[in-house]
Structure formats: structure tokens, C-alpha cells
Length: 279
Length: 279
Image 1 (cartoon, helix red, strand yellow):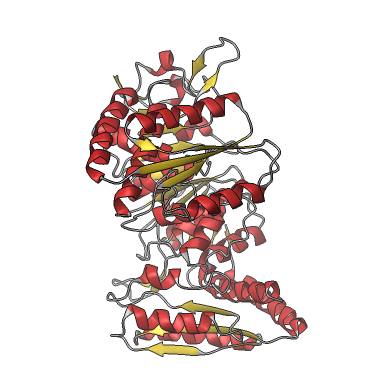
Image 2 (cartoon, rainbow over the protein chains, first blue to last red):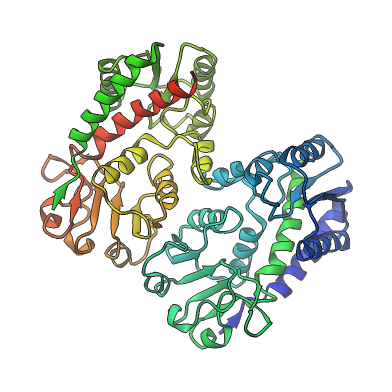
């Protein structure tokens, strides 16, 4: 079994991005909006800004109150949409329940949508020869598969989870690369039967240790997008039970160190792509 | 085996629509753009207008020359987008190769997009509590399944074909109804294995007699969107070999008389929905 080492690959990507930025000779700026004070979201946003800053991307974190309304968020987005000094912007999810997430994401100018979550960017991903901006997580996964030269075309790719952030854009990207693509979710009957036939198996449900070897086909490629704390062990882990699948799968993305760092690297890669396109 | 009788259901739908239109007390108008003189496309467009007219929907067929360019088509669409007397409009596909189909479909005002083929309508279909306009074919299939009270939630639904007209919107609609949904296509490896596990099996490849009973699970629901002339027999048929699957499947939509009439009925149903929404 070979580890899909997102930590190493993300470092390589960041190094390349910093060279590209130096050659751009114009400022690149990524602004991040965060609503409320969820500690793990705040930490994640700071990590993104830190990594951005380390490769020469400037930008500001905009904090809004936990009890603010949809209009307040959209007004701020419109301001940043119209600010020519802002290269790209993103809104950290999840948003508090009183806010209409879909309206918020739809208001991001698709040409500044570094996280690729405006629904229009999803529809563009489904078009042939797409120039759409994929969601950062989905792009990170595709880059990871490509780095390890994993065949996608014609393969049976099964995604567990149908979120607009991961499941749907990943489905569109895998289909564009000619995989046979399936989405499973909480209503799926015969889940074990369906996923045990996957050549490429991706889970993004965020429930640690949900799947063991009984779910994984011999030599399958396993991509673990889950990230959570197992209430039994108190340890951070992914959706798969690593120790049980490590002798069955051919490739596994570990948690941590797999998809997580790739998501941040891809967010910054989207930012640089936008900066280059707007020259 | 029970036939999914699209002919009868479409008649029922048309009767109901004609009553709704009478109660609307405002004119409903569907305009259709057709480029070139492909005889089967022309015939199909005339059928649509005939059926529209039979239930009280007015409208015009706009014919453009085979060698016209993308701009000519989009200019006409913009004129109809801005004409308040036009309730809905559609462009008959396929378009000649010199025309950018995606640009054409993207220029249809989504509030008049009766065929549901503007890519934005696809992204809306993927959203929760969607108010998007589904493609006429995909809506017709869902209505047919609902008429026969076929369980969709949790079932394994497999679609063969990934066109923006059928495969993609149908995928979105089946997923919204909580099916486990898969898209197969020409690159799919192990096609027979994947589709032989489908509870609901839909083919939209348009190659007559492609699939026999070796592909169909016992008691599967088979929806045949194919429509073509078998070069060997000269007869019109669907993607499935009806005689070979009729003792295996629980439900089959026949060709002709299944999905075809439902597509036209759903186009007109989308038109009436738009008319009601704009009151």
C-alpha cells in the first residue's frame, strides 16, 4: 500500500506557486470572510491566511458577528467583488443557521470564487472543456490522484457524501475525466455492496472510523476526506479505519496529512490561477 | 411486467394543462427556434407546436438557415427573452457544428427556459429545495416513475449516457429524490456488471437494441430513452431489446410510447409552470 502523501505534494505545490507569484509582478490578494467564533473554523481560516502569506499572497480576514444576517454577508461580498485589489475571496463554511448559505455562495463573483462554491461554477464543471473553478477540496483530490498517476478513465469511482463543497464538484470532475461515477449518501441501500466494487473510493461524511476492510475492494484507491475526533478514542481520524484497510487498498490518503493540506494548497492554486487570468 | 405507458399519462397531463391554461386568463406562448432543415428535427418541432396548440398554448416556430452563426441564434434568443408576450422559448437540438451550443443554451433567460437546458438550471437542480426547471426529458421520466408509484429513495439508479439534455439533469433529479445515482458512458469498464445491479436502469444512448436480459436485474425498472432505427431490421426501437427483457424487468417504458410523449408533455408543463410563476 502506498500513502497518498498530501503533505509533501502540497509543499511542492506551494513552492511552485510562490515562484509563479514572484513572476507575476502584481499583488495577489485573498480575502476570507468568517461569521461567528467557532474555534476550529477560526483556526482553519488563520492557517489558510498563514499559508497564503508564506507564499506571497496578501489579504484580510473579515470577521462578522455570529448573529448577523444574510444581507450583511452579501453586502460585504459585493464590496469585495467590486474591489479591484481583491484577487479572490471565500466564505468559511459552515455558516450559522439564520444565514442562507446558497444565497451567500451565489453572490460571489465567479471570477473571484477561489473556493469554487458558487453553484454556477458547479454547472461550468459539468460542461465539456470546462474553464470552471473546481472546489478547493475536489481539485486537491484530483491533483493527488494525478501525482500518483492513478488511472481514472473508465474506472468505477464511488463517492460517499453529496455536499456542494465536496461530493458534487468531485463527481463532476471525475466524470469529466471519464470515470464511471456514483454518489452514495445516508439514504443508500446496500451501501457495502456498492462501495465494495469501487476502484476509487472517496468518503466525505466526517464520521471517524465508519468503514473497515469489509467495504474496500482489493487494490482499491481510498481517498479519505473525513476529519473528526473519534468520541471513543479522542483521536483525530478519517472516515476509514486505517489499520483495517491498509493491507487491502493499493493507495490510501491518510488523515491527517492527505486531503487536508491539499485543500489549502488548491485554494491558493485557484487564487493564483485567477490572478494570472486577470492579467 | 407492467408497461410505463407514457402515451396515456401524457394525454392525462395535457388534459390537465389545458384546464389550467383556461383558468389562467392570460395568453401562454411557447416559441421554438430551429436551425437548418433536418427533416426529423423539423417534424419533431411541428409535433411540439401542434400539441401546444391543442391545449391552448400559442407560439411561433423561428427557422434559421443551416449556415447561420452563433451570434444570429443568440440575437434571436435575446429578442425573445425581452419580448414580454413570450412565456417560454426553446432551441431544438442538435445545432449545426459551427454553432456553440453551450453559448446558445446559456443565453436563454432561465425564467423562460422551458426545456431546462441553460446550464444554470442544472446547477439549481443540484440545490436543496430546488426551484430549477428540469430538462423536459428528465422531468418526463420522473413523472412516469411517480405515476406508477415506483420507489426511488435509497434505490440504486444507474443512468447510461451523460448528455446535458438527459443524463446530467436526470442524475440531479434522482439524487434529489434520494436515489444512489450512477452515470455510465462509453468509457465505462465492466458496464454489464454495474448496470446489472441497478434497481432503476435508464439508457439514453440512442443505439437500438444495445441491451438484452444479461444486463437487467430481476424486477428492475427499465426506462428506455433511446430512439433510433435499427439498421438490421429497419424498425424504430429503443436501447433495450424489449422481447428479451420483458420477463426479467418489473416495469419497462416502451419505445415508442414511453419517454417520447412524456418529453413533449413535460415541455408544455414547464411552459405552464412558468406562466403561472410570472403572474
